[in-house]
Length: 121
Length: 107
Image 1: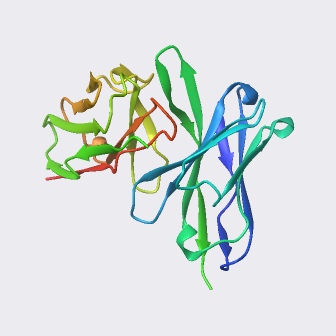
Image 2: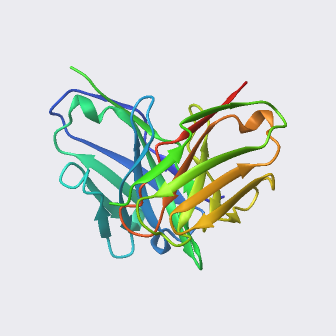
C-alpha cells in the first residue's frame, strides 16, 4: 500500500525548535516530490513548499521562505519540515503529500494523516 | 504568485441536487488544475486532475471542466457523503496555490 505516515502531534512553547516528519512507503520515494501544506484552525489549505528527495531540490512559497526548512533523508524515505523558532501563529495542522507528475497530471495524489502543531506559552 | 478564487465560499444543497463550484485563476494556467475534497478531521483527497480527468476510484458523478483561467467542478447528483469542503489548486507554476475553499452543506 502506498502511504505517507507523519509523526505525532506536538505541543511547543514560543521560541522552541521543532522538526516533524513524513515517511513514505509502498513506492519509490526518490521518484516523487513531497510537498507540505499548512491548514490553520478553521481555515483553508496553504502550499508551503516541496522537495524532490532524489537530489533535495526544494522550492518554497514566498510566504514561507525563511520561516521553515524542508529537507529529506532518502535513505529512510522520510521528508521533514522544521522550524528554528516557533511562534503562536505556527499553530496548525501540517500535511505532507506526494506530488504525482505523469503526462497531464500534476497533483497531490497521496496525503499523510497530518501532524497537529500547537504553540502556546 | 497565481491567485485562485473560488465561488461560492459556501453552498447549501440537498441530496440529489446538481452543484457547480467555480475556480478562477489570476492568470492563465492552461489545464494545470486539480480539485480536492476534504471532510472534517481528514486529509484532503484528490478528485480531479488536469482540469477534467477523474482520479482513479472517484465516482463518476464528479466532473471538472475549463482551461485558461476559468474552471468548474460539478457534482451531478449529490450523495450524503459529498458534503465536505472543496479546494482547487493550480499546478502551472510554483507556488502551487490553492483556492480558499467552498463548503458544501446540507440544506
